[in-house]
Length: 164
Length: 252
Image 1 (cartoon, rainbow over the protein chains, first blue to last red):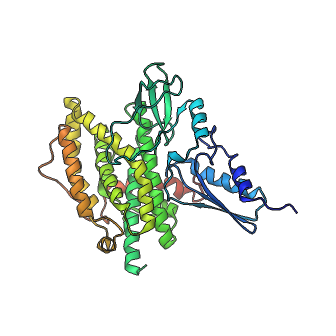
Image 2 (cartoon, helix red, strand yellow):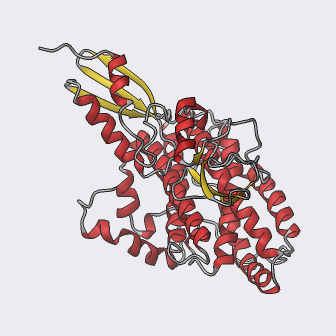
């Protein structure tokens, strides 16, 4: 009988699961997986939603369960928590760099800001040419977590990860 | 938790969720029909967010009474819904849709901002989560009100017309649900009177700055969430048809 994996091994296995909508980064570096706990042959994985209406959540939950189960646990529970609320600040520096290479401008650090009305967004750097001379074309994009911009220098449209 | 408190909380959460479900479905009617591609995408995003928020509110209700969110959304009849009439109204033209979304987003943002301090921790956590998404909506519809109000004579006329029609309906958002006073006394939900005062101040200022006149006659103001417009029946018939045809149809 093979011994059950440690929490570190579970974390490592979960880090193999790509984000369904942005496959260049995995669900651990995205900050979706909040905790792994092992008790006997039962594993509990805690996750938090990125955007509450994100349609990929169902898939992520299923994949977390399947991956953990495949490591040999008899029972696996995937719990969802809302607090503390997910923030793009949890996306790791390596993942941000991969986002940029993939053509998605990474999120900016969240600052203390009024949630009520904020029309002056700080400029987003073009992931292709690095220019800050860019304009927002749409605060909503092809997925809930992204916005659409255009670079006024290299003239390319690009997506950015919303800062949440 | 005391029985009356629990019942009052369930009533409040149901109203919150139902507003989001109905508004989300109304907005989704624009998908594929938006005036330009970007706006089509934006409104589809907003609709999807609102549906996500409904899931959160139904989830909180589930913790209290074990109810199934899908059952509540897809198998209740219009008479059992607790949505506000404003959100049931047909989507109208773009000005009508944008104005409604603005009036609702402003109310929701102000309510959530206050609800972050709820003494009921699950609600405080949910408010904190949803608020982060909601601010993108308000930013978007705030700009649209300005754009249409100060745009052309025609866009201003349409927005003004929408305002005359919706202003009274919007006041229903500030009518408490049964037992809500108990929740306010316990510090579980914000006092709607205070939220309304802030909403009136912010909305009036922005509408007037956008070249609109506040209606002198507020018009019809619904007072109970047990009453609905005739439109709720048809929107539910469409929204629930798949689930009612095939109860095993799996959510995606």
